Each structure stands twice: as structure tokens, then as C-alpha cells.
Image (cartoon, rainbow over the protein chains, first blue to last red):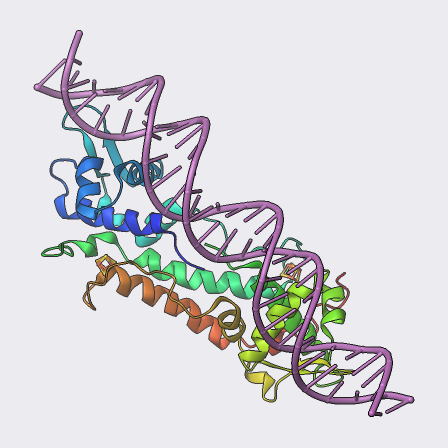
Length: 133
Length: 133
DNA sequence: GTAATTAAAGACTTCATGAATCCATGATAA
DNA sequence: TTATCATGGATTCATGAAGTCTTTAATTAC
Ligand code: SF4
Ligand code: SF4
């Protein structure tokens, strides 16, 4: 049970976007270079973030990605859900209805974690990467 | 990000073991039949639970598995850790030290979930499967 | 003591998914 | 209208989950 590498990339990319907001957009090439990862792969993660409405993309010269308006509201949970999806982390084939304690308990545990991640906003990451490379 | 099928099996097996505790032990064959899964595969999960000290095994005729002493203390987290391991669900290759906010936040979120699962004991599952098949 | 029963362990196969690359297409600004 | 940049699909590769088979070891019943 692990978050995918893609989530790692997405969180770090958001970190850099927060650091430069709301200035010039960063291209996937710039971001990939900063993170030290493949740009074509990172590109897919950024596209997911765009579709989730967390960042905006602009084609053409001097284009790239920047945070959406109201970016202060973006939470860790938003980023994680955008990449990992929102499926429950426990799903048994059968469905014995709402009286099933196993599902109730594991689902509630997951909810606890999500509440915490929902209250942590990515603007806290501002300045996190200063001097790291 | 999902719990493995093996965790599902283990939780259900514990459910049946709780239902019969502390009577006659259940063999892997009996458990596999109740759960409707392969016995050789389920056997591996049960062995993990034994090594984690959650249940006891007895070879020979009329052998099988039964809960350990102090089984009332066994939590959901115990079962999950026995099967999934205790690795953190977020691990970046690099390690920028303890001042890394990303790791701090995700790790703390995981801790929130684990605390909840730690306080949920499997004895709550007693009688959960009555009439389900 | 022998045979039947049961758990434990390892090798092996199969399959799904994450991780990554390549290439073609589409949009936009200079 | 050309250079720049994002988007999308197809494809490959590696990894780990899921499951099977077979052998060995332990314990009880007779
Ligand atoms: S008891 Fe709950 S977890 Fe188990 S099979 Fe039924 S619905 Fe699924
Ligand atoms: S900033 Fe934190 S999460 Fe990112 S690479 Fe460094 S240690 Fe890992």
C-alpha cells in the first residue's frame, strides 16, 4: 500500500508552482528539469492536475502551467485525489450492505486521514525548496 | 492506492476466528471454504498472522488456527500491519531531512488513520457473519 | 511405531498495473 | 506562419500481487 510515484511528482511540482505564483508560468520542461524527472511523464501528471482544476495550462510561446485562481484553497487531498483517484482503499467483491462493520471501520479510518489532508493547504509549501538541489 | 486482497482475506478470517473463540481451532480448509477462497493462498496469510503473533497454529489431526491469548486486544491495525507491512505510504527517493514538510504532512495523515485503526478491536466483529453466505 | 492429518515453506506461473518512452496532433503567441 | 508548448494515444518495460503446485515438518490418533 503506497502512494504512486506520480503523486510524489505532482506534490513536488505544486511546490514549485506555489513558489513562483502568481508570476510567469512554468513549462513542463522547466519543471521536469527542476525535479529531475522525465518531462513526458511529468506532463501526464500535470494534465491530470489541469483536469482536476488545480492548475491552468497555456499553450504557445511562453506558455506553461500556473496555479488556478483561489490557489490558497488547494489542499494536499486535492492533489492526491487528482492523481490517485477517489476510490476507497478497501473494496471487497461482495456487498453485504451498510451493516458491514469491516467496511465501516476501514472507510472511517480512511476518512480520518483525508480530513487531515484536506486541512493541509499547499501554500504551506512556499519556500520549501530553497537551497535544495 | 489500495489494500491488497490478502488483507481482505485476513480480516475475514479473523472474523470467523473471533466468532468461534475460544473453542475448537479452525483448519485452513474450513476457513477457505467459509470464505470461498483458495486454501493454499489463504494459508500464506494465516502464516503471516501467526508470525505476527495474532493467532496460534497447531499441526496434526484436529489442528488448525485459533486466536492468541489476549485476543481482545487485537486491533484492525495489527491485522493490516501483519499483512501489508509497516512501511510508510509515502517514500521519496531523496531524503532532505526532517524539515521536509511534504513528508511531515503525509506521514502525520497516515498516523491519523493508524490511530483510528489501532483503537478498533476485532472483537467488535463478533457475530458479523451470521446469515451471510 | 505407523499412518493420517494439518501447517509451513519455497518454487513457479500468471496477470494487472505502475512507470516510462515515443510520436502524432492541436493550440497559441511572437 | 513559424516556433513553442500542451494533449493524447499507442507501446514497452518492470514490478508486485494473486494464485497454484509440491515438498517438508510437526502433531495427533490408533
Ligand atoms: S462482510 Fe463486509 S467486507 Fe466482508 S464481504 Fe461482506 S460487505 Fe465485504
Ligand atoms: S522535499 Fe521532502 S519529499 Fe521532496 S524529495 Fe526532499 S525529502 Fe523527499
